[in-house]
Image (cartoon, rainbow, N blue to C red; front, side, top):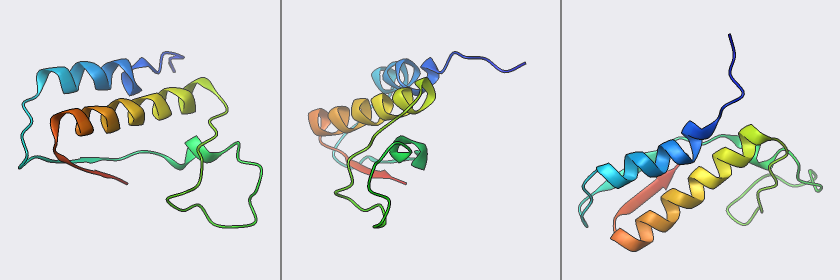
Length: 84
């Protein structure tokens, strides 16, 4: 049975980050999804680092919030982050 609860993507990520130890030698690799760009209006050019996400449903919104949580945590705790 599928669940409509996608909170693992944002609340779950926050809870995980709150319980792990990070330092300047840490390098976190997060696997995201292209679905956060699914609502973009201009599809004539490829997605790149400057493409603004445009999530269109609860799943993609929680994925985007999760990414923002990770990015802010990385900046606050000064470690390396790669999002794929």
